[in-house]
Picture 1 (cartoon, rainbow, N blue to C red):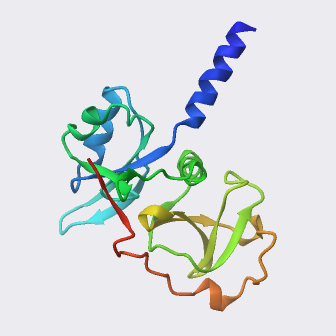
Picture 2: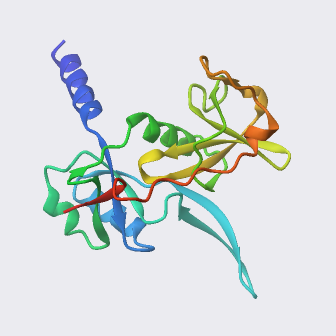
Length: 207
C-alpha cells in the first residue's frame, strides 16, 4: 500500500508541473536539451527526419520540429541552472510571468513522435475543421484537418508559440468534434492560416 501511495503521489506531482518553452540560439536545440537533461531537468525536443540534397550527396537529417525551442517540464525553481545553460536565450513568458503550455498540446506531440509517424513543420493554423482521431496510434488526439495533395494531415499546434506541425492521417480515422457546426468542406480544408498576434500582448522573455 505504501509503495502504491508513493507511486501515485509521484505521478500527481509530475502531472501538476506545467510545461514551458525555452528559446534557444539557432541550431543549439539538441545541445540545450542534452545539457539540461544532464542537469536533471525533464525536457522534450520533438524531431523529424528530412533528406537534404547537396551537389555530390544526399543526407538524412534529424531536425527540430520547432526550431529554436526546447520544452521544459517544470524546473523553474532552478532558474539560474536553466538560463546559464549554453545556448539558452530565455524562458518564453507572457509579460513578466513564464507562460505555461497546455499539457494536452505537449502530450499530443509526444504521442505522435512515439508513434513514429511522418511529421514536419507546418504554418500555424487557427481555422479549419477540428477533428478527433478515433482509431490508430493517435486515437483521442484532436487537431485541425487540412488537405495536402491527395491526402489529409492533422495539424497539431502549440498556440502560445504560434507554431504547428503536420501529421499524415487517413480521413476515415477522424471524426468532427461534437458541438461544431461546420462541415468538412474543401473551402475550409484549404483555408489560409491566421497569423499569430505579434503585438505587445504576445510572448516575451522571462529572465
